[in-house]
Length: 308
Length: 256
Image (tube, rainbow over all chains, first blue to last red; front, side, top):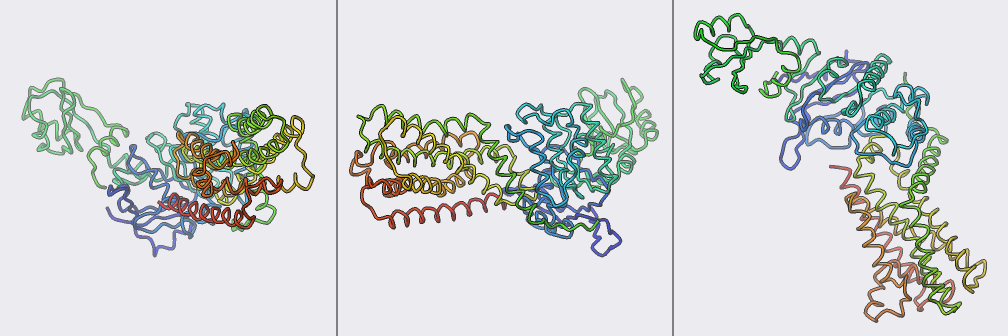
């Protein structure tokens, strides 16, 4: 991977947070390995990855809740976790529960008090879609409603930088649409947003830049379109007695693996592969050709661990 | 867009005010915490100081002091110990840590709420004592005793803080009870210390509640005779030890 060293590129005036060469291990196991990223105002940066890929560790380091073993983190030109950074940021983290005997209204008013320039109360309520339950105790909230309250708390300070760790977990379709709209509105108002998710659709719909994280490494990054372009390939499935490895010799084949009784090839050029394949073994059974969707491509990228 | 990121004085005070107010709501609205905290000392006192007592004003006065001590230690240990451990276990404290809330607001609000509970416990004990026994105390004694006990909860808040930072959420309430109840008994808060064996009386010298209760008993001249300076010095020593330990544990927990 080519780190984008942009220390000298001062044209990046709207850069609000950066991490260069971040590494972190827990008990000898690498959780993050040489991570480079830059976050700009008015942009959504999505960190995509399976559970355990290092998403939450990365967020915690950017928040200053965790110290990296090596690397530099800067948030608004200050140390991550410094008061100056915290007052301009907001964070929605994964929590099991919140104090049950406080009302939604009280939670929000308390968090507003932490910031020098809090967001207007009605505005917070509107963004989070909590108009109808302001006086409800957090004990009585469903999982999705709790997520909306946590989102409300994360924007109480009018953040210029917003961290959202798996924000739509447990939300129903309608609530998720509301959250996405709120994220778009905040982005339009100039907030830089760091979003971790394992929903591809969420990253695709919202993100200006996506980083695919696997075992602590960024294995692919770019805009949604760039990633789609780079991994748009075709898969060919058929039944054969041959071992899958043999097919990796064929032209344009990227990978070959068994899939039940089928063999599945991924190819950059289906015509070339098919031509060679059919001339070598004309009696292939149950041959199907399909374009890999973004979702499948991501899954495959994640499995192959290809370094971008 | 270059707003100042500083808070003015009114805003800063407001954080502490709201944090304390909501900490109070949070505690008082939770009957599993507030009811035992307020009622148990008065209930125990009714049993041992009123019903089992042969109408001796001296015994009633003695037990009022020791159950008062027992009472104020409870919310201190539970608000900090169990309350903090549960919120930490839920991940809620991570959200607070990521916010610009000053860490001292969290500590101060819990301290004030513990003190408010102490006041209510002392009032409930006072009601039982003055309506059901022949305890007679001067106003000065009542005020001295109340002030002493309300502020005497401080070292136990710090002990609670240590437990709250160390314990797992599920086991915290049980472990806090395992510290609270035996420590109270061995300090002579339930049964007068002079009725315990010689060995246990010596052991009590090493327990902070014993020294707080002796100071309380001094107010009504029923203590075993140690000097005020000695009890204060030992309580201060415990406070310093707990404070240092709490800081060490907190540092270890936050910088991972």
